Image (cartoon, rainbow, N blue to C red; front, side, top):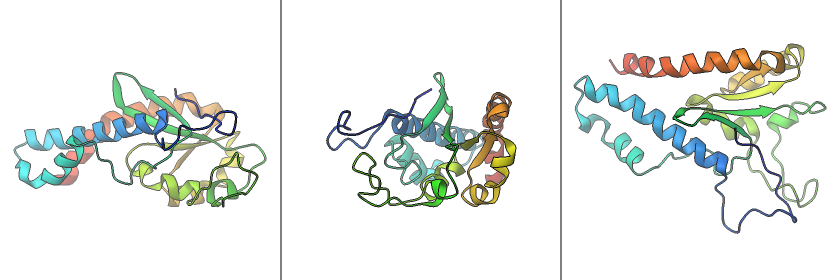
Length: 186
């Protein structure tokens, strides 16, 4: 599990270093998912030329805008299975919908908070199409208030008491992902 880090004057992010350990892990996970999507199609006899751009992007380590440029959330992953990665975003106890929808401007709440040009829901929407991005709530009653908001951005949610069961089910979903991708193309 990779934990978020608090950056500020006493612990600055390296100059020009946008990559965080969380982002690097998510890039590896997205690239591995892409490989797992392509491999069975090639084995099934589809011509490599059909997937040339995808293969080139994957081989060069490009993930485009799927993984946000800065990720500072909890990232869980299985070391030997990088495709089994996910983002966990705890919903703060006193936060409202703005936690998910607000775009923070420079200077809001002081210099320790970096400027954010996108809301959390927008920032993680593309990644949520490839890997699970899960909002963690104190209970189902609170989570139910955010279901529609999160669903439109392809973010999932879980209540704290259900997190271990949900993580186990995600492992099964990850294994089934490869089968679904083959059926889409066939």
